[in-house]
Image (cartoon, rainbow, N blue to C red; front, top):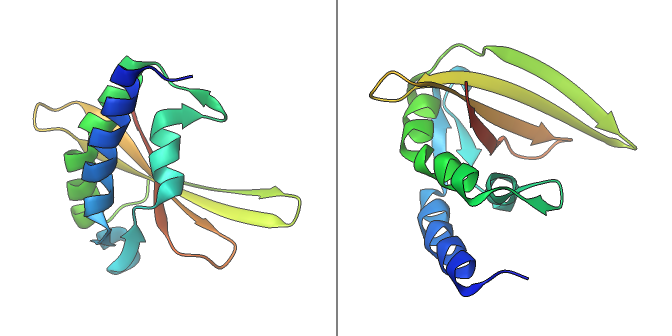
Length: 124
């Protein structure tokens, strides 16, 4: 069960996250990257377990840099696929840098024939 402080944090970041909607991705010829529940939940959890609060804050804190990276980064650093049961997923990683020079990776995903969407961000 989440405490009131955790619930307040989730409500605050949820408003910020869902305002993004979708943005054009330079690496995919301006294809839209959707910011949906898959990405939001992955920022909060790994599998079914909640991430540590400090990790959640770091990931959500990178969102402005994530947006900029998706908009300007034309090079895909890594690509991989995964198949579980009858579901096939494609994953792409874009490398970004914060204003102070710290590197991070943005993970984009497309499941089956769905939309390209933001899936995760992690620091180097």
